[in-house]
Length: 263
Image (cartoon, rainbow, N blue to C red; front, side):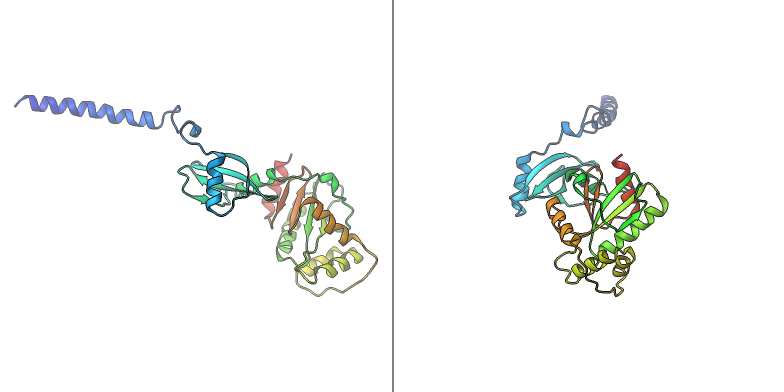
């Protein structure tokens, strides 16, 4: 009977070492915690199968990489000319459209990555518009395709105004691009350009009545053709000097972040 305590002690002693060894294995730098790619993978074919199940079969997969968030894949795609990205968990059970927001900085990491997917030749955009927000000779130039009847464009315009009050090295060249489903946007755009009036545009954003003016100005039609040639189909859309194209009413701090990212 005296052998039982000895056996129990030996068993307990071995168990302690077994337990102590487990964290060393789980958190070893050479294990999954050190390199997720050693334990996890996601192939193009697997993504294609997922998209097929979601009724999005005709999609080109541009890139698969680890996302800024551990445990997620970041998948960049081209869906018939429209680029985008989404996230897939390591278990391959969940599709997450984003966005991923970094808490500390407030930066939209999804949008940041999206800006690298789509680029145009900035030099092909003639910066002859009379609608300029900021110092025309500023080093940091941004072309902004906007619509006087687009509420999101009005919101972006106010955010741009905040930037030029703080930054003298940034200028926004405003290109009027009236969308077809905004029935009054075309004549408003033409009237604004006839008068070369930034205030008229700001009045339109504020839902104030602006005068209907006609003149021999073909700039609106040229802007529409320009947008089509660049693949721009919605407003507001910003084009940075390095060719990055971002659509949406971004907050001022995010625009500044994108400007700094392009340096």
